[in-house]
Length: 131
Image (cartoon, rainbow, N blue to C red; front, side, top):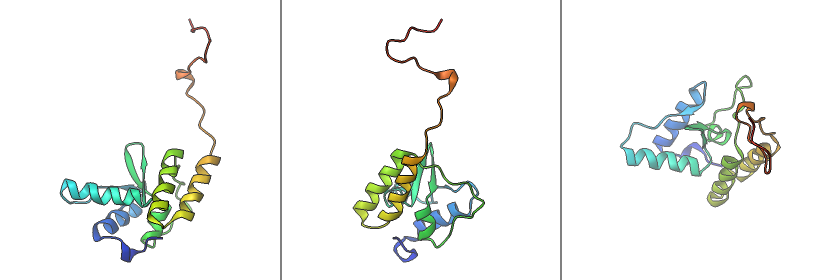
C-alpha cells in the first residue's frame, strides 16, 4: 500500500484536495501541462484515482494513502467494472494495493447494472422496427 512517504508533494496535494471536496473530485495540480499529466497518470496507475465519466475521483486506496478515511455519511463511489479491472492490473504491476483493488473489483461485479433508459431501448436481433 502507498504511504505518504512514497507520494510526491504534488501527488499528495492532489489527493488531499480531492479528499477535502464533497464530491471527491481530483483537480489537476498547478504545474506545467506535461507535469500535470505525469502526476495524474501516476495516481491513476497506482489506483489512487479513478476515472468517473469525464472526472477523476479519489479512491479508497487514495484516501488510505494520505491517511484519510471515508466518512460514513458520504455516498459510496460507484466504480465501473472497467475501471475496477484497470485498478487491479495497476496494483498487480505496482505490487501494492492488490487486496483493496480486488475488493473493489468484486464489488463492481456484484453491483447490478442500472436498467436501460426506456426512451433509448434497442430492439433485439430479428425484432421488427417500432412504428
